[in-house]
Image (spheres, helix red, strand yellow):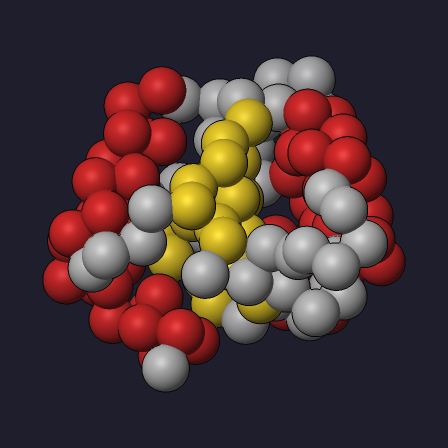
Length: 122
């Protein structure tokens, strides 16, 4: 299992990494920008993919909603979980329209994160 964590906040990335390691996931890549995440996806060998990508939709350089489209095109086999404090109905609908598999509102609890993650993982 390989996971990509995309979030501008180091604290959020560390929290997610900690939750993932707790359940035995060690192959965790991360990016603090959407562009960095897209580049990581593009650099993966063809036989490798991210099983799950977590992404915030509110980032400084490139809005997460814009990269969702690119992510689903470049990594169509990956399951995507949005982890964001942005929870207005328009944003959620757009994200779901791109085919995301889960949407977690920040701040989230360990239980909420793992519940959403494990639904996709198992």
